[in-house]
Image (cartoon, rainbow, N blue to C red; front, side, top):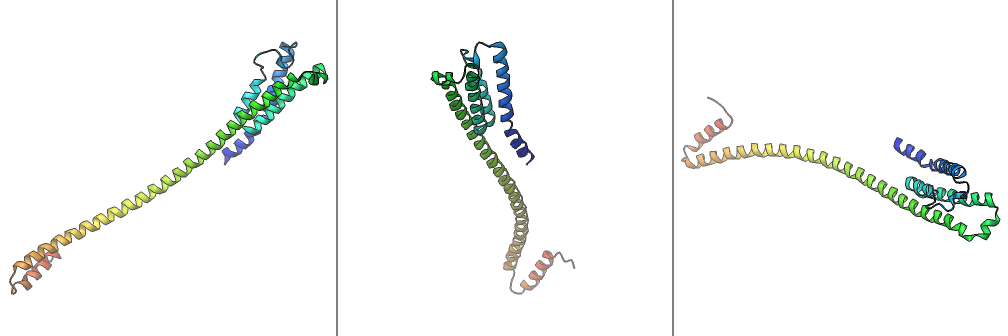
Length: 194
């Protein structure tokens, strides 16, 4: 349960991580590449790092937020430097935001499918472990019952062998000797001494 709480808290970190990465890229862009707003002309565009990292870590929700934030950063940075007219004069400007959203969504969806599959397999492994423990307990019970039954059968088999020997001996007696032979066999079976 504690792991699940940590996972829930961790799952909301994509807001902070996306903002942090965008601030870092804005700073790098402003100080090292001032003539290339939003890294225009740099291939591949470093903003792809945000689109690749956040969806790979957080899945669908992180992908949608990171893609939207990166797209807004890209378009907003351009429009802040050159005015809103550049958005309508240059339709190519929307190529990157569209690709950011598309790739981010696909990566996020893949991660979400992976997370769902991992949860399913984790639950299945837990079910199989529980079933294994149950089967081991039942095996131990059956093993103990088998041991008791084997001892019981061995005891009855010994008794049966003894009774068979007595019957053979009684069959060898005459009708007058049967009584004495029966008493003697019972005495031997019951370990009675005279």
